[in-house]
Structures are given as structure tokens and as C-alpha cells.
Image (cartoon, rainbow, N blue to C red; front, side, top):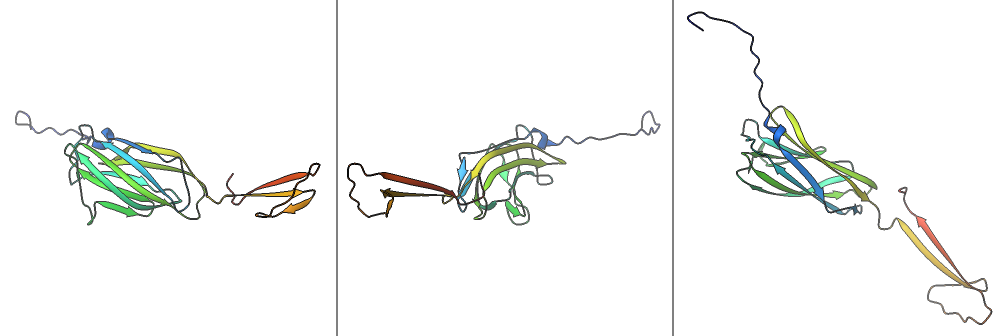
Length: 193
């Protein structure tokens, strides 16, 4: 209403999504792991000046790649950012992701441990990102954790004197002019180059 007269105009409201300002950095000290072993990642989160509330909490999502299973996580927060509980838990593990929820603004450090599945051999790439409002942003990926088996290679060494094999633990007399030979065999026990 303007000067007693009603005017109608089309208006479009745009909601600014605070998640677009969130910074997510993921890292690990691991460069390799064994099947059955653990890999720990650190996810650093900074909301900058964006504030999140219970109607649209900040969610940090860690996608679990094939080959990993969730073990545990430890979260510390600062600057007014607090954990938010949804559906009875402040850490949700479902399918191929782990999710932590927060309200307020500030920083968080998430240390998350995964176990490498016994049958997995290969390279692991792991991604974490922020979700809040209507979109996701703040993506950070760690590449290059190589999973190899400790028993992937078998090395055997045999010795022979003048063509006669000497077994491990046996002794042999070697005389001047005898031929001493060694045979070293390395066997790759898996399909990983």
C-alpha cells in the first residue's frame, strides 16, 4: 500500500545460504595402510561469520569410500559453534557417509577413524563437505592413501654348492674352486601392482 493505493509487483526473495561461506579442510598423516588397519583423518571446519541454527544446522558430511568402515570420531569446537543432536545422535553413520551437525558459528576439529576392510587393496580418496541451507559447499578431498597387504610379497632365497641345494639351517663345506650360487624368488601374492 502506497498513498492509500495497493500496488502489486512480483518479488523474488533470495535466501543467502550460509554454507557457502564455510571452509572445510581435510587431511591425514597416512600415506599407506594395510587391510584391517586404521586411517585417521582430521577435518577442520570454520564457519567464518556464518551462523547456523536448529532450523537449518550446519552438517559436515564425510563420504566413506569403498574399502573403509567407520570406527569412531572425536569432535572439539570453539568460538560458539556447538554440536547439534538430530534423531538422537550428534554423529550419524548411514550407508556410505558419516555426518556431524552443528549450530552457532565458530570452528570445529573432527578426528575420524576408519578401518580398512580386510579384502580391500588399492588407493583411497576420501571427501568431506559442508551442507547447510539449500546447498553444499566447502569440499575437501584427500587422495592417495595406498592400501597394500603386508604379506603381498613373498621372498625366498636358496643356496647351492656345486648344484646341490643347501636347506635353511644346514651347513655346507665350501672348498676352493666350488661354485656357490643363490636363487632369490619374489612372488606378488595379490593383484595390486
